[in-house]
Amino acid sequence: MNPIDQDDRESAFTLALGLKRREALTLLGGVALGTAGLPALAQAQAQTKGGVLKVAAPANPSSMDPATGGAGSDHVFLWTIYDTLVDWDYATLKPVPGMAEWATPDAQSFVLTIKPGITFHDGTPMDAAAVKFNLDRNRNDPRSNVKVDLVNITAVDVTGPLQLKLTMKQPDAALPAILSDRAGMMVSPKAVQTLGNEHDRKPVGAGRWKFVSWADNQKLVVTRNDKYWRAGQPALDGIEMSIIPEMATGLRSVVAGQNHLAYGLSARYSPIASKAKNVTVVTGPTLYCYMLFLNYARAPLNNPKVRQAINFAINRQLFINATMGGVGEPAAMLLPSTHWGYDKGVAGLYKFDPDRGKKLMVEAGYPNGLDITVGGYTDQDAVRRSEVLIDQLSKIGIRCKYINGTVAEAAGQFFGNEKKFDALQAAWTGRPDPSMTYALAFGKGAYYNAGRAEASEELSQLLLDSRAKEDITYRKQVLAKVQRIVMEQALAVPIAFNFELDAVATNVKGFKPNLLGKPKFWDVSLAP
Image 1 (tube, rainbow, N blue to C red):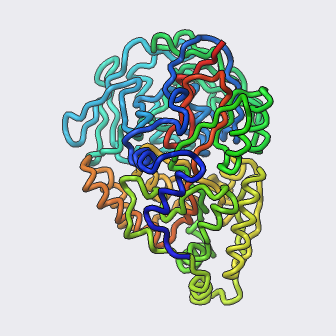
Image 2: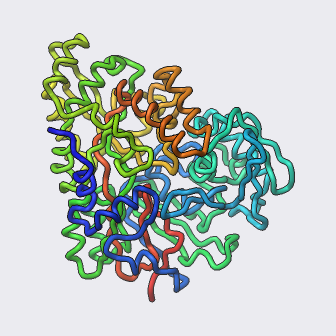
Image 3: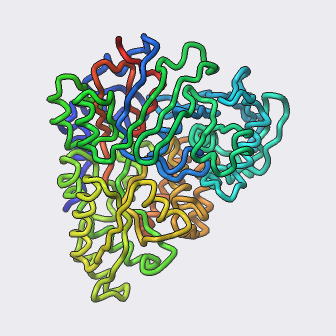
């Protein structure tokens, strides 16, 4: 298979989804964002208060505590309960003020000023002391999975009732974006101190909705926070998120009127959703990348030639055709071709070449092939993806034994303490800043680095350097080096970028997709 050119990549995004070429480019380029074919829906403002939004969610949360969870799919649930210190703009993922505003009085200082009048759902104040508690917990707690995000912070000092000073090892251009993600989701210190680990299942935040209940693999319910600090929000009385891993079943629930919305559907369901009279299809490009995560800290995947062989064995376009309805972009790295951090020099490293893969397996000392265990998910679409990968890897002598579970189970067994598999077939759901993606996935000790191993001292330093300046040209140059090391060493196997497809009932107003492929429901309302 020859490497696809720029026009091929763009057409992969636009095929069958109604996006114009320029629109697809600007969406992932961080210039503009809307809903393909449905501007009125995307731009609608919440008009009617009340009603409970019923959502078909494809995965059970791993935890409802932002610091201790590990699945990228958790965000959709977390954003209902938690506000972040920094928000991001839907159109660009550019950081904007959230519960706090920020300033950088000098190169190694970051000052947060919290907006007044914010309280947690338990009535306690969301003040500087609460923020310090959260940041210190996120940096130091043994159960925290976001330590790597805050590795550049050396001290958090309260300088006023609503002000803190963060001291850093070096300048950090990514810190505002980091504080718009899990590390910036503020939990109630009182709740954590009272509940301990039980806070994972009884979360207390300061967001638009309050936690009501969570039945594992069934339903999570939140209700309106009547004391929410932003006037006039939220519009919805509450949200009921039913856990429906099978995408076809989730879509049918919306067509039948049992739910209002199903998100994260495969593009192959677009024809079905488009024919439903009471459903509107909402689409948009994302940073959501199907991939194989590798535990490169242990045999046999500690051998770089084996990892490289796997990358050569994957026919990415065939994967897209067979599992994604032909709509997607082959992934050469963890950033799509229209992202500002994309590097063309890395893109051609792994053309589909199973013969080269076989040769590398021999050089690695496995002339008769080898067996690996792979974690996977139980839904029909994940099983279909696994079948394609099993077939492709078998061509170079790699025999895959899949062990399937729910998203939370399989991810926890791979990234957590069990280290049950050699690899995990899953997806990287993207982060607001590209340096976060590479630090979280490949940084020493990072949660999504299953073996917690340091790939190289050079990579560790480059990950820090990628955040040292705000200048995009400088950052692009550093990220190019990061991506080359990651892909030359084959620390992961990126396969394909997904295109968002959501099925939305026609009485849902104000819903719009975002580049992370994980919806927020902040501006959503239900028409009477």
